[in-house]
Amino acid sequence: MKGIIREWTDKADGDFNSALREYRARNFPNYDAAGFHAQQCIEKYMKAFLQMHEIQFRKIHDLSALMELCLPVFPELELEKELFAYLNQFTINYRYPGEFATKEQVKTAVKSMKRLRDIFRTLIK
Image 1: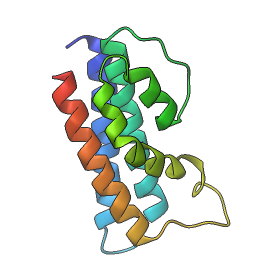
Image 2 (image 1 turned 90 degrees about the vertical axis):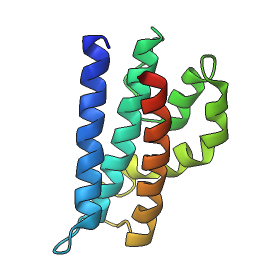
Image 3 (image 1 turned 30 degrees about the vertical axis):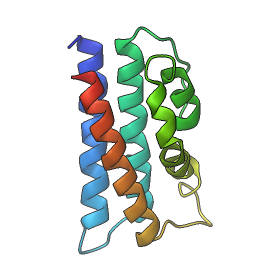
Image 4 (image 1 turned 60 degrees about the vertical axis):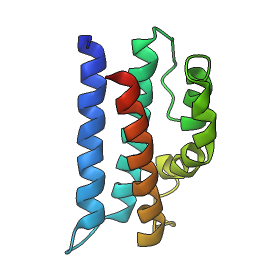
């Protein structure tokens, strides 16, 4: 695996672990952060995949837009478009005062993250 791809996947795995840690915390769970890290995990796996296939991408955080860039190489990703769209809400929505992610929302985000991570780990390795 090329160095830059390994860097993306290492950072993605850091977000994976942070998402799980915050979601599972018994004391003071931070569901906003758990959802954010779930989204970030998949964003970084997608960027590793794009890098692997030498597909250019901008500095964006929109998983649906990144999915569109991946489709020419792996069209089956479109079957997961609802998961990408769901995770997108954690990019900004819960980062500022006024809105808070619930445990149930983050439970779905973590499940989505795990499913998508499994797909990308298979594609990248």
